[in-house]
Length: 448
Image 1 (cartoon, rainbow, N blue to C red):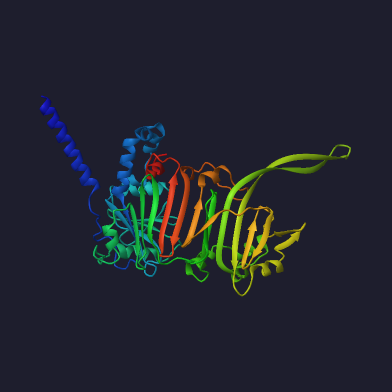
Image 2 (cartoon, rainbow, N blue to C red):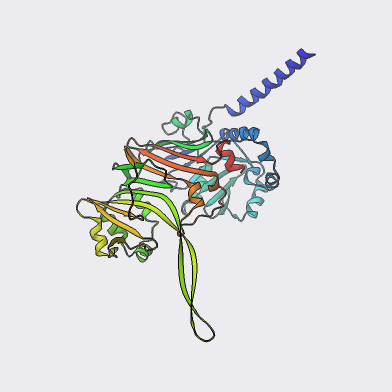
């Protein structure tokens, strides 16, 4: 009897192990999914992400079985109508596809029921020759029979309909042996990205954190003097920006030059002309001070009465270094615009009067600090083109008055800190560390 029970258990374990290996250790399926015209591809390993959730469920069953989670399961979602494949590929081409991202074809369980669901989710339906289009702002679902293509437009494109129609009838696809898909085919990462410019990135939820690693050749950074603090700080940003970079110019287009000038009385173009792009910023801490506010009221007999109130003000302790060009010093432009003035024997930067910014000049560098008697932090030089760090947890608990983030953001509250580095060899590393280091971070994002 004992032998039979033991054999039965071994058999059950063997079957479960076989099913586990069959589901979660299959090779990537990239066949007939990405058209030959694609220049950028993202591969999402659905089975790998599912595996993270399974392990997190086994380790933390109570979180998945609480009453809130049960209520959410009763509500329909997109996933209820889609057959989840082993992997999903997203692709675009800045020429033919105009920068719109498309998914590979996904199988729909019940197209009619899915159509009703999308209509209830405020998607606008339009019918075309052989497919239906459902649009909600920049998110688009296209359905032909039981095939679904998801599209996302970063900007609204008139060519979207023709692009989707062509994809439904596409016959020429990239193979796993093609240069664009080779790295993805061999990747074991949760998410992979590759493009025709030989950039390659991997994203993984491993060791209970999110980590992005890889190489990028197209970026807006140059080699400069990059110094990092050794003492704890809330945030820092160190980089030398290539002002001629198309990426930087594209980002600059999102800044309204008129509003910037109204706020600071300075011209963005003139500032850029007088700087070489090198920026070193440190937010060391945020202090609080009690400010007394005096106002006056009048009683019924028109007697003037002084009224005092107090206000708790958050004052950042920060340092900013901006490097000038060799031919023209930034300080000359700021003096001319009266953005630097001498007030009570202190040299101050006055374009942002919310705080008192003390100003110094060191060779070609403009130094701005909120601490007059600032003792320089210990720093060390690196060979990296970009270094950035922010302690999200500290900042959410102690914020600027003029840059408020909701303190109870359900996703930001999961994060302790994040950092990004780019070396002079174009190697990039991004890390997001959650506060709870005992659970998989992907599991925390899904069930928190």
